[in-house]
Structures are given as structure tokens and as C-alpha cells.
Image (cartoon, rainbow, N blue to C red; front, side, top):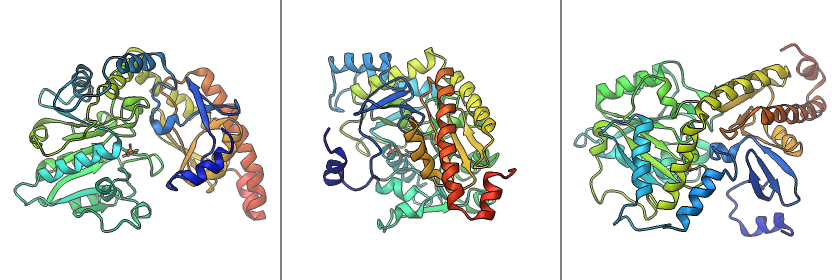
Length: 413
Ligand SMILES: *Cc1c(COP(=O)(O)O)cnc(C)c1O
């Protein structure tokens, strides 16, 4: 497309940064731009393209469902919708009492969770919701009120009331809990904050405190769910059961869909007429999600996420650059710590080398490749990432002062 840069700048709402390329098609872990340049996709549409691009199982499911039935109103149910609800209950271990509400995005799943928390009011005694500092739960007003990043809440005050943001420590958790808490919402790994794990025992303690005070433990698995961390859901590594989880991103493999899955008594809080959405559980979206989750199971992609995640960690550690610190995260949701605020420069250099990665903040590179990555893609990542790093290292030695440069570039880390 001619002058797409100018058209984008002119016609698109200015909510996103300048687009890096105009992408035309993809296959597996690769996407191409309009000039035919090829990129290795190690961001996966931000933890969305679980099966990579144009996976035959997903393409077939969408094509078949589109030719069969794309949409009906919620005065009816469809088979793909019921199949997905049962599947999500099973994978999450929500038990027989569990229930599923379908949304169209992550923010919308969290809006449903917010309303669920309001319904857990204990006849008006429980008015507060606890959320974590630096958390990300989405951009709509309810989800934004839950989000613990002042920079993205700025300009949109007043917020929906009743949310308290606490430090991500066991002490802050203990101190904040009392009988006025209706719910606590937690990301098991804070993705947008730079792939940050919670302190050890945090989720288990939140579970105990929530139970003690009649509050709901809501786990936002929008980024971590659907096998991303090597388990179906990250909470499953902590030996606890939440009252609700929210899902989106990976479960649709690129088809917009979200979900709220409730466990136990929380499943009976909503009653008819209290919530809904025109597209909720749309047969096209739910058929796609069924195909994605079935393929993750059939192809053993949880195991692959774990194994490839370990390989990636070792590979990054092996680079031994003074610009790289440790690697955080689990499975195929990894955050590479940078010792300098070079995130944006490294992302740009990687793109030049044909590699898509992302910097949720200047000191972190996030990797969230498709769960299908194999040896060939890891080897190619290694080559391109090293090349990008070398470029940035060369530029960095000009940018920082002499004494800095000596310790940073030649330094011993
Ligand atoms: C991406 C994300 C959201 C928001 O999802 P959208 O589909 O962009 O609305 C919420 N919570 C977490 C943890 C996320 O990573």
C-alpha cells in the first residue's frame, strides 16, 4: 500500500505509537511485510498467537464455522459455545459448580470480574477491591480502575470507586485485608510491568486471606493463561484454587474472545439480566478457541512451552552481554532484564534484523513467541538477537560517558 505511513498518521486514532511496519501475511512463527521482508515473530501478537500464524487447525475451524453459523443472539446457545464452556471449566479445574461467561477482550473479561466483585458485597459490608501496584488489567473504565499504573490512568479521572492498590509484598497484603474487602485481583505474573513474578507464597496467602474475610480471589490469567507459562493457567503452579479467573489473548489464538471462569459459590453471584454482551460466546469466536485449546492439548504444547522456555533462558544467559541481566518469567512468557534503558533501541535494532520483540518498559525485553516454536526458530532468534544487541552495544558505547562505557561494554557484570 502506497504511503501507508502517512495514511496511518492521518486516519488512525492516535492511541498507539507509530506503526513499525505494514504486515501482510504470516505462517508459523514468521510474518511478512508489504515489501516481502520476513520477520521472526517472538512476540506472538503479545501472547496471542498461541499456534503461530495461519495454523491449519485454526484456519479450518474458522472457515468451517464461518460457512456454518457466525452469530446468533444470546436468546439462543450454540454447540461451540457450550463445548468451550465445558472445556474451560475442565482445563481450569473449576469443578462441577464452575461457570463461564464469554467476553470479547481481556478488559471486558475484567469488567465482568469487577461486577462479580460488586455482587460479593455481603449486604453492603464489602465495598473495597484490592489490586496491585504496577498491575495491568485493561483500558476500559472498570479495568482501568483496577490497573495500578498511574501513567495510563492519568487524564481519565475520576476512576470507578473502591479500588485500593497495594505494594506487591506479603506485608502489604496482610495489612490491607479486612472484612470490607469484596475481592482481590492479581496477575500471577505481571506481564505489562515487565514479566514480574509475585513474591513466593503471595497467591497462597491471598487465597487464605480472601477465604477468611469472605472476599473473592480473582486471578487475571489474560496474558499467562492458555499454556503460555507451561501450565494451562499460572495459578495451577501455586497449589491453590481461585474464585474466578479472567482469560483472553491466547485462548482465541488471534480471534477476539475473553472469558470469566468462576469456581464454587462465586458461580451463583450473577443472575439473569445483570450482565451481557451482544457478541458473548459468538459461535465463530468460540469455535476458534476450541480449535486452539484442542491443538495445544493434542500437540503437547504445554510441554513445549516449558522446554523451549528453558532453552531460551539458557540461550540468553549464554550471550553473556553486559547489557543483559537476568531472565524473569515462566515457560514462554519471559522478560529479559536490561542493565541500561535500551529497550526501545533494542526493539528497533531487532526489527532491522528481522526479529519482532517488545519492551514493556525501557529496562525489559518481553518474549512471548508462539507455543509451537522449535529448534530452528530458537537458533534463528539467537542469531538475530545477538546481531541486534551488537548494534545497540556499538551505539551505546557512543552514548554513555567514557567511564560508564568502560564498565558497561568491557565490564565484568
Ligand atoms: C492484555 C491484558 C489485559 C487487557 O486485555 P485486552 O484484550 O487488551 O483488553 C488485561 N490483563 C492482562 C494481564 C493483560 O495482559
